[in-house]
Amino acid sequence: MTITHERRLSGAVVVLVGFLVATVPVFDIYDDVANQGDPLITALVENFPVLALTAGIVASGLWLAASDWSGRYARTVASATVASTLGVTLLITLIVFVQLRLQGELKPLIIAADAVIIGAIGGVIVGIQTAQQQRAVDDARRQRNRARALFENHRDAVAIVRQEGDDPVVADVNGEFEATFVSDAAGLDGLDALKAAAESDADRDGVDPASGDAVRREVTCDTVGGEREFLRQTVPIHSTASVAEAYVVYTDITAQKEREYQLEFLNSLLRHHIQNGMTVIRSRAAHLRDTLDGREAAFATTIEDRSDDLAGLTDRFRVMLDALTGDVDEELGAVPLAAVVDEQAAALATAHPGAEVTTDVPDLSVRADALLENVVWNLLSNAIKHNDAETPAVTVTAEDRGDTVRLAIADNGPGVPDELKDSIFRRQASGVQNDVGSGFGLFFVDSMVTRYGGDVWVEDNTPEGAVFVVSLPKPA
Image 1 (tube, rainbow, N blue to C red):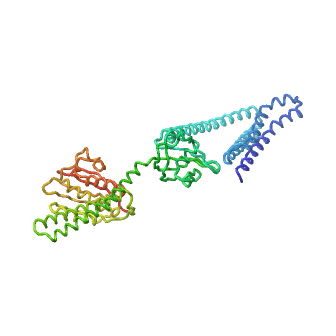
Image 2 (cartoon, rainbow, N blue to C red):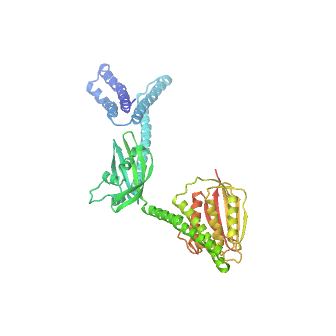
């Protein structure tokens, strides 16, 4: 059954109820005139209020059938009309039955008074329902006001797009949208501005409020200030059979994309120019070492060793940049923590033979990827490089914490001041970092641990030094 047919049927039910209840005053008029001999005019005056009410019921049914209400709302009106009519009829019938059956006397005044009580109860019910509807309307109005305030004051460019028929229509735009896309000189407004914000015809077609899906896409747009890059998000508001609305939000990510391009350039520079240059230096140093003797051969060996160190540092930088620019897209899975720690601790002991490196890591796995070894290496090397003790000491422990594993790297260095404990992992942090490698390394550690769904922080060691703590989730 279509919505129109359902609405007309509901209206017909209400009209039928109106005619049925109208038989009561019509019968009373007939009885007054035919049996009691009363003038017609007095019978009509007596029953006029009730006739008017029944005419109102009939008119309501006709209006309902011709309205644009949905079938659900029309059914609600028809059901309430039938239910209330049957309910009052049953109550009056019960009262009449009790009076005749139990008391043997019909009391019209009491019946009328009971009808007043029924009307009072109906008034209470209608009043409660009306108040509830008013509360719902007020709540909806407050929600709309909040949404409107957010829409108008949002820092991103936002448009409300309505789908009516085949083409989208821009219902409204906020001030930031106008400032970003609408040019008075170009005469752009509304949908023209929204279309001008798209990168291609295919992209314009992607703004579809009727799809019902939230869509995120990076787009390049011409703005009042020139070409910029945006994250465009289409967020559905509501959808009916004939109308659909959605927010189209443009978030400027030009600066973010520029930083990504810079990181990609730096990655390329490390991968090709610096690595290739270090390879040439190392090969020439190895040749000199083999052809020279004595002090000159030792110098060549030092150059070769230092070249290896710089090449290793460059490799670590390259891995970090790959992770930060998204070039590494490895799935997270179970990684045995003890194996990673033991391997990196052994490498640290080889690189710093004067340091004491102790590990006590049980057989536990964490949710991570192959870059976890770089995370551990950065924390271990950071503990040694900034250690001013005569014999640097690093102790690595781990313990099971239920759903997580707690990894702790403790050293006997100078420690970390309280005012730097929160900022030490930020890229711009300075103070305890004396070179760019360690500062960037701790930023990398924080970025990767966050990617793993964990957390990292620094605590004071007893009696001296610092403890870098990493909490990592266990694999599912």
